[in-house]
Structures are given as C-alpha cells and as structure tokens.
Amino acid sequence: MQPYQVRFGIGLGKILTDINPELSIGADGPAYWYARKAINYIHQKNDYGNTQIAVYSDNDEKISIINTLIASSEAIKSDWRASQEVVLKELLSMGIYDEHFDQKQLAKHLELSTSALSKRLKSSNIKIYLRARNAALQALKHIGEELD
Image (cartoon, rainbow, N blue to C red; front, side):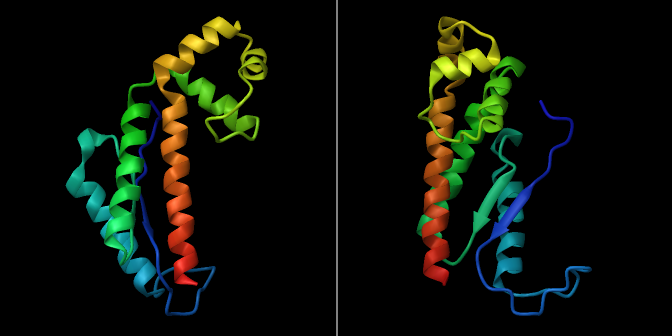
C-alpha cells in the first residue's frame, strides 16, 4: 500500500573499522556481513513479497524466531486496507506501539464509534501484529545485550 518498498537487512555484530559519518564505503565487520546476509535472506524467502525486514547474526536459533515473528506480522499487515493502516498510524502518533491501549481514546482520536473501532481492530488483527513485533523487539534487545 506504500508507494515504495524498501528492504532492511539488520546485521547484529561489531563494526571493525572507524565510522566515517560522511561516507559509509570502507566500513567493515560482522554487522555489515550479517546485514548483507539478512538482505539475501529476504530475497530467498520472498514470502510472497510481504517481508521487507530481516535480521541476521551468529545466533541462528534466536534469529530464526525473530525473522519468523517479523514475517508473520508482515503477513498480517499485508492484508490491511487503508482504513486499517490509519489505526496503526494513529497509535504511533499517540506514542503507542503495544497491544494494550485505551480503545475509547483511540476511537475518539479517529472520530469513530467504539463499536466501529472494535470491528476494525478485530479484522486487522492489529493486536497480534503489535504483540509479534514487540516479541521480536525484546528478542533483539536480548541478543544486543549478549553482544555487549
């Protein structure tokens, strides 16, 4: 539904070279190697064109779980209509990225009845989407702590 599709390969690891904020060419290390593997993973899996984000590191088991959570949430989001995307955008504008939120407050922001919002939430599976994304985030944070 967006005008451009961008793929994100996230590599978890160290950068061995000095970082030049003016030019990324020449930067090297496991973080870059893993980011390239993550991009290749997106190309290989394809997931019917739904998945645009992947993570890679040397922790295969956790990375597999994280990428599955991301792909599952992307599969949910791929079925959203524009009106359902508006719900996520409004939650984000309210600083909310969690499955637990005040539905009455959200309905008010969207100028919808609570009943109409409830139907939209159910049909979009947005709470499951947010739960999966947050589970992936927590797992990423855990791997990041292990790297330190």
